[in-house]
Image 1 (cartoon, one colour):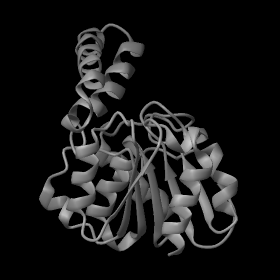
Image 2: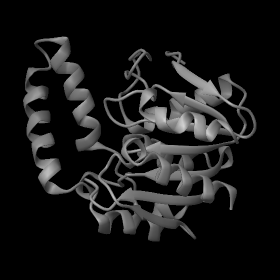
Image 3: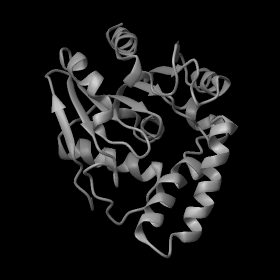
Length: 226
């Protein structure tokens, strides 16, 4: 693999891997690390080109990030793990569960989306405009190129089909905020499309793990231990 992930770990027991959102890093899960480390061996990783993990030379796509996760698990001899993904991290976890079903125990998708249309238009339209501008400028400086790549993840990815979603075998919790930037009907579509998935809404916006950690943690831990 052309990169080595930066990660933090804590606790003992069954492994659970935290996957952050677009433009963030593993520090997003500061409100989850201690709570989950009481019961699990927690790994929070920085995705390719995020935080302290280098960009490398491979494609900057959700599917590449899923393959990167496989490499991380192989490197650390993690045969099977629970996955908790937020936003783009949820999209990575979703794609990973489709591609590598034998490596996933339980799956938690927080604020994930199957396609760009799952995002509320009031949020998505400015992203698409900024992406077009950044792409036009990407040949002129590295900052614009990096910005275009980050925004491109939200415009061009993950494009998961209903057929792919139906193939997920992991026991799944789909969880989102009542005022999430992901349309509620899209979140329900994801939950309905994964066999026997559970659906949970928590009062709040897209960032319920950070802003409502106690309720979020309780909901996810109840699911994991059920």
